[in-house]
Amino acid sequence: MISRRTELLNKKDKSKEMRHELKELYKKTNRAIRQDYENHRKIIIERNMATFRSSKRAFKELSSHKKWIQGLNDGKYEIKNREDIIKRATVFYSDLYRRPTQEGAQKVERPETNIIIESQLKENSLDPINEHEIARHIKRLKSEKSPGPDKITNEALKLGAHILVPYLTKLFNMIVEQEQIPKQWCRL
Image (cartoon, rainbow, N blue to C red; front, side, top):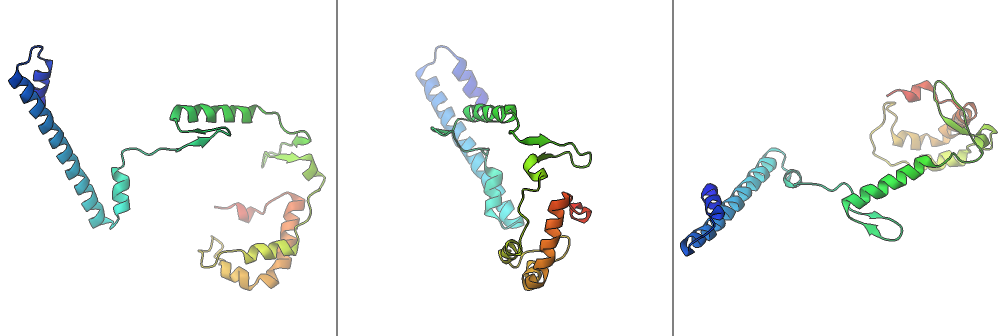
């Protein structure tokens, strides 16, 4: 069908019957493509519904492409063209990495951490962490969440907050003063 359509399409002088045949071939080809696509969609949807019971998964599989960034606000206007978004991101990051470090910031090389410490932090201008802050953050923890590797649930922290807060305050202030995180916290 497609080869005959190509053959008729490449002919210079077409009779009325040839043009009509070409027209019918176009219709048949388009119908066949549309029918094939519908069958393909149906098979994918049925397979996902039977296997995973998820229509969302089927439609994700059927989507032909996905945009990374829908649009980008450039202060003045919104950019929606992919090339313009890439150009704007390139300009942003090149400006970001070209900027000199802030005044008053001092680069301190440490072999174990290799971090930048601002001179204000070096002078201990940070206020110590108080018990009220820790109690407030413990109170804001969401209930019924899975515990981490330490197996301590948020409910346990909330119930024992009145006992734990003074010890946690002391621990966190000690960490800030010594500028060293306990090794147990760094494990995966």
